[in-house]
Amino acid sequence: MNEQRQVITNRVAFLEQKIPGYAAALGIAGLVVLWEIVCRMNIVPPLFLPAPSAILTAAWDMLVNGELIENLLASMYRIGAGYAIGAICGIAIGLILGFSRWADAILTPIVYSIYPIPKIALLPLIILWFGIGEMPKVAIIALGVFFPVVINTYSGVKTVDPILIKAAVTFGSNHLNVIRKVILPGALPMIFAGLKLAAGTSLLLLVSAEMIAAQQGIGSMVLHYGNLMITTKLMVGVLFLSLLGLIFNRTLQWLERKLIPWK
Image 1: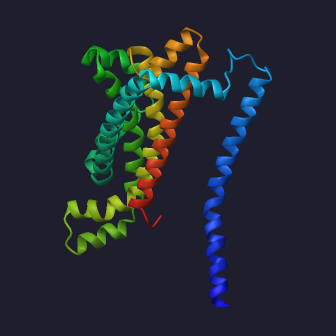
Image 2: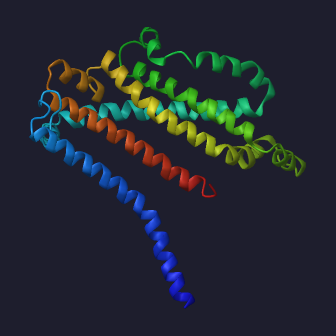
């Protein structure tokens, strides 16, 4: 009897885990089917809203001729490099600001005063500093990632229980061990919240930078086909931007489960 109850409990738990995923997939599938029906009934002209089947056909053509891969690789390099630089620097500076009173007093007001500036507005200045090339795009993405990460890391460090820090110091831990074994694990939930927020910001800055100062990339491709009013290929770019955002989000969720199993 107990074994049967355990089996039933396990099945219920399994369904509870799987149902949200199935519901999300069904919702997306239903939206795509409705979209296709609306387009095939000519309720909306194809120029303004191409059908999903037409978008997939255009995506396949662009994939075969190499155009899509070329632009996608350019965008992935920029967002990958910029995100990594901004995230690493943001976590490091956030830990320093949260742990050091002097750094907190001197640097935190500077961080909060610069944070509200729209980062894309700094692109002309960054181009002036670094010239035309990949560096300005990577730098503007890194800046956009840095500030949400540094602020969330700083907030996460401040939420760590001071008693735990005092206990670690009492038992002879040096500053490095206190940061590595007490402060960093305690701040990880807030750090990942900042990383997720920065992922969306990095995509926005990627598209903006590529539309302003790039010949290749998904953003440049979207702008090009928008100017030509080829909306099927424009929507291919939008589709792959959404896929990039989804991959970013899922990767961060997976890392969060691995690094914060107690959450």
